[in-house]
Image (tube, rainbow, N blue to C red):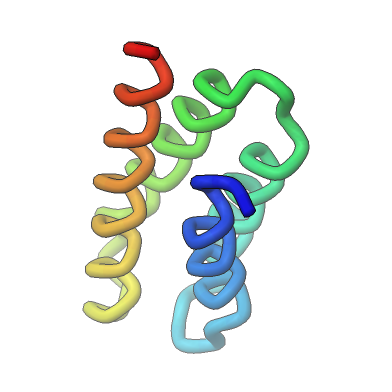
Length: 86
């Protein structure tokens, strides 16, 4: 199990949540795909942060999904900093 597994699981849950708009679910799936498939962890995390940050301000986003995305963003930023340091 890697450090990204819990984040990937949360992204999977969000991408299957029908309360989340389809365009947002697509971006969430793209972010998850980047984390799973990219070999460069720092680049994958940066790209996923960019995608998720872009959708976190969608006006149609339900409050529970926005909060979860903000939590994911915080965790990704922390993991990225950790990866860069060591």
